Image 1 (tube, rainbow over the protein chains, first blue to last red):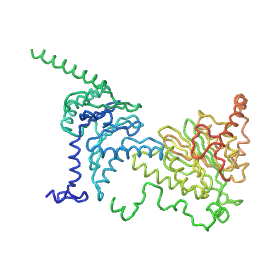
Image 2 (cartoon, each protein chain N blue to C red; image 1 turned 180 degrees about the vertical axis):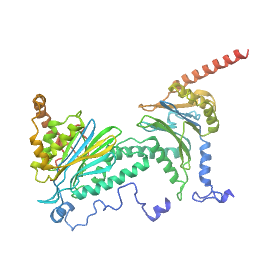
Image 3 (cartoon, chains in turn orange, purple; image 1 turned 45 degrees about the vertical axis):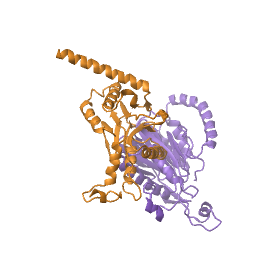
Image 4 (cartoon, rainbow over the protein chains, first blue to last red; image 1 turned 120 degrees about the vertical axis):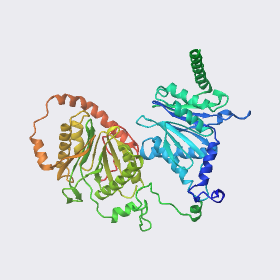
Length: 250
Length: 302
C-alpha cells in the first residue's frame, strides 16, 4: 500500500502519513549522533565524528556551526542539505538585526528553520530536507535554550536531547542521568554530554567533537586535547566508582 | 515552488508594510517632471508648523506638544492632539504633515502588533524606530514630511528616538521638533538633568512649550503633556498656553545656586555648540550619533 503514496511529497496516504517526510526521518537516523545539553549557565553540543579517509583533511568536516555570536547548531543527516539550511539561517540572523536592531532569539531562528523545512514538505517538485537540527544559545535575558527540529518542520524545546544514529540509546541515558546535580556546574554539564556520547561512540575521545556557549560569551570549540582531558577525567571517576563498589561487596 | 516559477506568480509579501499603501515611487506624473517638483507646484497645501518636544530622564520619558494645526496662515484646528499612542509603552510626537504622521503611525501600530503576536513580546523602541524609518525611506523624495520622536519604555528602560521621513534615525536624551523648537530647546537645555524629579520634569516641559507658543506664530492653543513610565503611558494634563505663560511670568526667579552651574556651563556650551555645527554637516541619513541630541537634521520643512 505504501508504494502507491510515497512518490509525490504532496500526497497523503489513506491513513494520514506523508511517506516522503517519514523517509526523510529515516535518512536522519543514518547520520552520526549529535547530543545537546542545556545547563544552568552553559549549553553544550557534542557530535560523533565519522572517521575520515587517510588522505582527507579532518578539519574541513564541521558538524557544529555558529549561526550568530550567541546561537549555534549541530545536525544529523544529509550534510549537503544542512549546508543550505545553515546558510539561510545565517542570512536570516543578519537580516533580523538589520530590520529590528536586535539579535535573533533562539526561538525565532528555530522557528525560521522549522518554517523553511515545512515549506519544503508542501511544495511541488521538491523533497524535504533530510536533517534534524539541535539549536542552542542564550537569549538577551540570559536564559539558556535548546531546541530540536525535524524534517517535518516541527520544533520543540528540550532540556537534553540526541539525534542521529543510536539517538534512542543516548536519550535513555540522558533521561536517567540528567539531574539538577548533573548540570549544576559547567564542567559537569560538559562531562554529561561526553558520557552520553561515549555510550555509542566506538574508540573513545578522539571521535568526539564538542562545543559550548557560556552566557555572554562566544561559541567555543574544544580542541582534541581538551576533549581528551575530560575523557580521562571521566574514566578516572568510573574506575574510582568501581573500586568503591568492589570494596563494598567484599 | 516549481509550478509558481513556471507561471511567474509572486506570492503577496505579508512581511512588508500594508499592501494597501501606494507603491513607492508609483506616482503618475507628466513626462519630464519629477514627482517632488510636481507636488511642490501643483500639490495641496499641507498643514505644517508646531512645537513638540520629548526628553528622557530617570523616571521615564516626557512628551509635550502644542495643539495648533496650521495651514499656511490659517489655523485649521486649535485643539488637535499631536502625541499619538502606538501601544501601551510607546508614544510618538508628530510634526510635519498631520495626515502623513497619522497614516504612518497606523502602519507602525500594525507592524508592531504583528511582531508582538509572532514573537510573544513587543519589539523594543529601537526596533520600532528602525521599522518606521525603513518603511518611510521607500518614499524618499516624494514630499513625505514626518518628523517624530518615539518615546517609550522597553527592556532597557526609558528610550527616545528621533525619526525623520528622509530616513534619519537618532537616539538621544532631548529632542524638540517643529517651527517652535529653537525656543523650546533654549528652555530645555537650561533646565534638563537626567536625575530630576517627575514634578520638575512636568514643569520643565510645560515651560518649554509655553515659551515656544508665545514666540512662534504656528504654535499655540493648549499644551499637552504625556509621561511614559514603566507601567505604561499617561496623559498628564492639557493646559491653555496663554494662561500657562502668564502663570510662569508670575513665578519667582530661580535661586542663585543654579547660576554657578550656568557660568560653568557657558564655556562648555560654546565648544559643544561648535562641535555640533561641524557634526551636523557630516551626519548622513540613518547614522546614529548617541548623545548628540541638539539639532534635528537640517532638511526639516517648516
